[in-house]
Image (cartoon, rainbow, N blue to C red; front, side):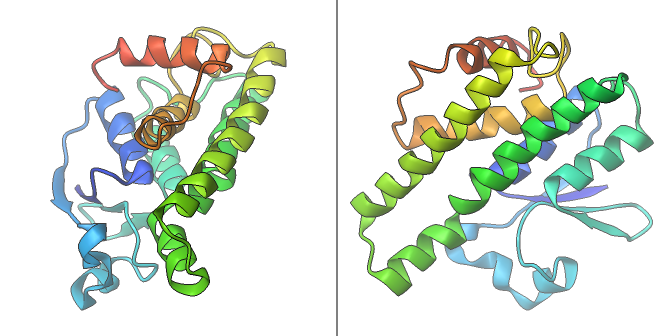
Length: 201
């Protein structure tokens, strides 16, 4: 398999964690988003959305979208599992992952930041405020979700890492990068500490 990735792409980071947890080695190509390499004709043939990650299988099939890639990996290489067995716990893990991927990450990624600058004249300070606002908005909701859910354990969904944790850690990386204060998010901080104790993360 071949992974198209970039080190500051939180979506790519999710997939790399999942691969590490499953001890799957893949070839990697680095697509520098800051140099717009994702818009190159050759890469557009790989992923028409012109985003990372993309996972090219040995068959030549290409998977896109990090959550879909992680679920494929879980179905194809089931050990260790990235989703809990019990249906409600599985739904909880998916909800956490989607909250982060769809409601935080998607509106803070590079193409959104560039659009804010290009179309609305936002400077770096304004873009930073945008990022911090949506990170706090999402993390506040996530903290409440983790606090009330009986499925929260040492990790986001039980006592083993799941797709939720694979999605959380890259977003915390971004929060630290943009100087977001995580003091008030005790459940998130506890889970992050447990994740970061594992080499896969």
